[in-house]
Length: 226
Length: 218
Image (cartoon, rainbow over all chains, first blue to last red; front, side, top):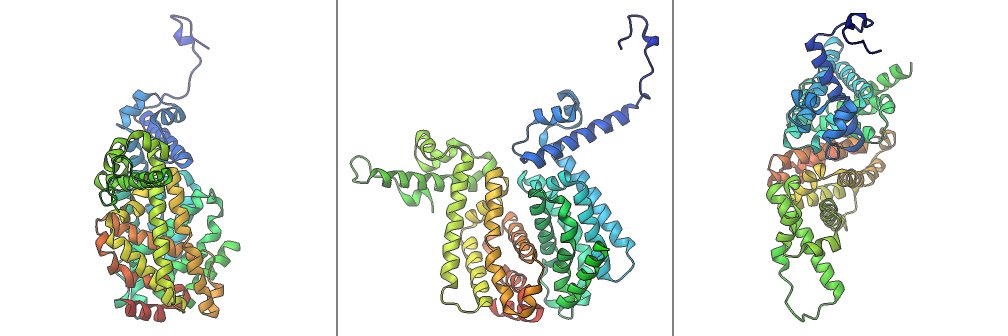
C-alpha cells in the first residue's frame, strides 16, 4: 500500500530498520550465493555479471559498490568458502582427542559434511577455482596446503617415514579434492557420506599401513550406518 | 610439433589431394593454437593469434572449427592420443602388471617433460578452457582407472579395496603433476617417477613392495 503524499506517517510499520552495515553484508551474501550457484550450474567462464545481479536481486551499482568485477566476487566467494571449510575441518581435528587416525577421521568427516551442506560453494572452491585464472588457482592451492599439517603427524607412525615423499600430504589432499569434485560434478553431494570411509582409508594407508587403515575406515563406516 | 616444422604448403599446383590439404591445414591450426596458448595462455589467445601462427586464413579456421574452444579440444585430443600410443608402446612386451604401471608412468612423465608447452596445455590450460574441455579432461583422467584397476588381481587383498581407490589415486596423480607444471617445472617431471610409482602401486602391492619397486624404478 502506497502512502498518500504527505501522509507517510500512516504507512503500516515496515520491517525493523536495518543498519547500513547489515544491509551491505546481506547484499554481499546474496551476491556471493548467486555467484556460487551460477558457477556451479554453468562454470566460471560461462557465468555473466548480468546473471549474477539478476539472481542476487541487486542492481549493477550495488554489485560494483562491493566488487569491481566477476573475478573479484568469485575470489571473495573462494575466501569465504575456504575460511569456513578449513575452520570446520581444523575444529573437528582439534576437538577429537583420540589417536591421530581418529582425528583425521573427524577432520575428513567435517570436510565431507561441509561440502554436502554447501555443494555450490564447494564446487566453486574445489572444481571451478582451478579453471578461473591464476589468482583463483593459487587460492585453491593454498587451501590444499592448509590440510597438510593435519596429515603430517602421521609420518611419526610410519617406520619408513624418512622415505615418504615430501609432497605426500598435498598429493593426498589433491586426491580427496578430486574425488569430492567428481561427485559434485555428477550432482551426487547427497551420497558423500558413503564415500567417507573409503577416502579415509586412502588417506591413512600411506601412514599406518593397509590393515590399520582398513580397520579405521570400518569403524567410521559402522558409525555412519549406526 | 609446430606450424614452422610442418612447413608451408608449396604454392600453386602441388599435387596434393583436397583431403591432404584439408588435413594439413587442420594440423597447422592445432599446432598454431598450441603455440599461441604456450605464449600467452588460453584465455588471452584470440582467433587472430591462432591463424597468424598457423599461417592460414580465418575462413580456413572456420572450415575446420566452430570456435577457439573446439580447436583447443582438438589439440587436447591430439596430445592425449599421442600419450595413449606412447603408453601402449611402453607396456608392450612387459608381462607383469607392476612393471607395466611403472613403464606407463615413465613414458607419460618423459613425454610431458620433453614437451613442457604441451604438458601445460593438457594439465593447466585445459582446466580453464571452457566446460567441454573440462569435461573431456575429467574423462581422459578417468580413462586411467581401468589400467590401475588391473592391479587388484595382484593380491587377494586387492579385491576388497574400496571402489573409489582408483579415483583417489588418479586424482592424487593429477594434483601432483598439475602442481609441478603450474609452477613452471614441467621439465623436471621425471623426478616425480618414484613418487608417482609408489602412489600407483601402494594400494595393490602394499607399502613395502610399492616402495621397493618405486626406488628401483628411479
